[in-house]
Amino acid sequence: LLRNQPDSPSLHLFLGEAYDAVGRSAEALAEFDTASKANPKEPAVHFCLGYLRWKDHRYEDAAREFQAELENDPENADALAYLGDVRMRSNQDDEALALLEKALRVRDDERVAHLDLGILAAWRHQYEKALAHLQAAIRLEPSRADAHYRLAGVLRALGRAKDADHELARVRELQQKEQDHQKDLLLNANLPRPAATP
Image 1 (cartoon, rainbow, N blue to C red):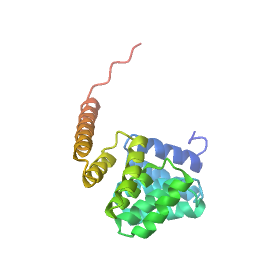
Image 2 (cartoon, rainbow, N blue to C red):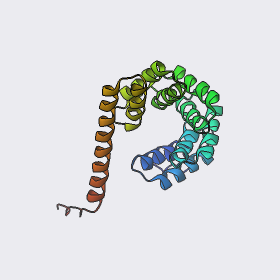
Image 3 (tube, helix red, strand yellow):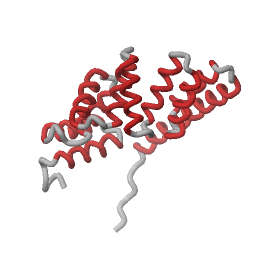
Image 4 (cartoon, rainbow, N blue to C red):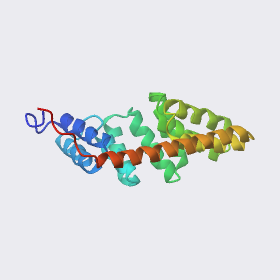
C-alpha cells in the first residue's frame, strides 16, 4: 500500500502501530513521525508519538505530543488520560485530577485514568474512592499487575489484610507469567525456521 501511496499519513500511522505491536519502537517512532510531518492534524498521530515517548520515560516530550493531540481533538480520552498521568508524575495533582476525570467523562473505560485516579485517591486517604477506581482498572485489564499492587495497599489501609495478601499473591503470579513469557520469546526467537514445503 505504501508503495502506491508513499505520502499517506494514515498508512504510515497504521504501519507505526504494527511496529509498536511487535516491540519495534524505533521503526514505530519513525513511521509516526513521517505521518505527523505528512499531516500534523492526522487523528491519533500525536498521541502515538507521545505514547512511545511516555513508554521511554521521556515524559515532558510525551506531554507536548499529548497536548498537540488535544489541540486537534479536545475530547481524545487517551491523550487526556496520559497527559494526566504525566502531570501526576510531576506532582501537579490538581491538573492531573482534572485531566483524568475529563478522560472518564469522555470514555468510562479508560484504564489509565482509573488507575491514576485510584492512586491519587489513595494518596489523599480517600480509600473507598481509590478502591472503586482500582477495581475498575482491574476489570478492564485483569492481567496487569500494577492495579493489583495498588489495590493491595488500599486494602491494607482499610484493615483488610487477607484481601491485600490475595492481591499480592496475584501480583507475584502475574509477574511470573510475564517472566515466563519473556523467556519463551527469547527461546522462540532463536528457533530455526522450518524448511519450506515444495
